[in-house]
Length: 602
Image 1: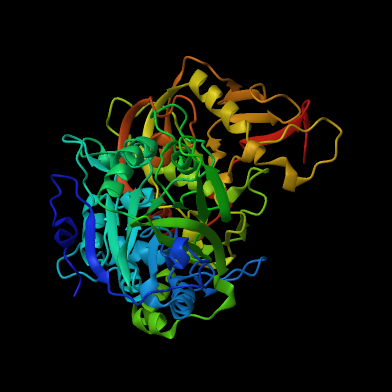
Image 2: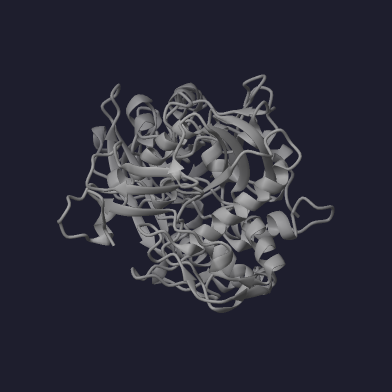
């Protein structure tokens, strides 16, 4: 039976206590040969391995629901908790199960049609509803603790709390606090005791930290209910407490990248990717499991500024493609355990097969979702693809903006804003999405819009839209007129991801990539005339952008006219179903193009 979340708060949520499982691992010693100690005695030693995953995003199987096929990529990666379970079993066999700890750094319940299905189609929140597939899989594998990710909040707090109830492990978030009392809303930490033969036990604490960006990205769900202070300040508060409680080893599981950067500008005073800052600034941490950035970091060593000690960081690749191993060597000297060394390494999911125990456990859920995404909702008159969408105005992205325009126009009908022109933004999320000619299924449409974003209507002026487009155009690498154009090197300037490049429908404009960033938008018109900076427009945007994601200017502070909780992906499916036929003449428009000194690039 799933365990109730109150078991994890038994010390009292009011005092902000975490999870303490004293004597949870009555383990035999993992001892190694040691050099002679003073007086000829050998000190006691203990070897501990902390295993970590992050950004699982609902990947249980090595299956691509959008392609209805086994997952493959050019790098030969494999995905899913089925593979992770096999790797974990191997490590537990090698190290001794009772000398291991398994944790995760968040973003668990959003990201695939599997997780969408059990949040929206057959929701876990329904009376007598199902147990979430991620809870089932992670319980079966035997996770000890999981940090909250920002995407845990995408379906609202009710869904997250229900998932929490279904888990046999705590969801940690030291910096996820009650907005009024500022006391922890989730367990801040987890502590486990490992027995060592002939020596005092080893106490290991795991501190969970999540991302301050939740306050922006899921504002609709958390505003006035939860607050998310900075990782650095909360680590500085909790790590000394854990040490004072007798923790011999302190591991931080942080849903926060290591770069020290933020995607949301100065909208909140806290750093989005703060893991390395935590290592540098907060003494007393031995290792940090890093998440959120979807990067692969086998081992990163950061020196703490106060103590001079090295903190080891590791980020396993997302979607269960990698498993991190932190191998600790401890020595018992002067009446206490000391961490002598920490080494981090990665294991690759492509080296093993799925654990049949996990695939059997969730076979029914998997088949339900496969059937759901393969429902035919219409037909397409021609193949639509995103292959060139990041540098050419592609009809498939116009489909998104057309749907958003129609939904917002209908929502504002009869209001004081009904007469204003409605524009829409959309991003080329995927470079491989395709809606084939012929039958169109839910999975075809879902692959076009891979995020669970919802729709918001904002009020902006022509001048603000001009600034918005200039910021978006910074996505392109400056390329001189006459120079060869390599499309693989033309985009993603300064590391900007594709999802932070926007089309804006309803306007016509050129992006001159030969010009410096900030001076690239040329011949910007509306209705065939130069854009009036004072004119008001309604901009249909996704909630990520509306709340400041990507740090686009003006949109986060703009007046909100309307919003809804239905996913844009669902709206696209509804639109396609109602039309019956997807014909580009119903949605495609030539709004923008790339130029160099006025000459088209393509």
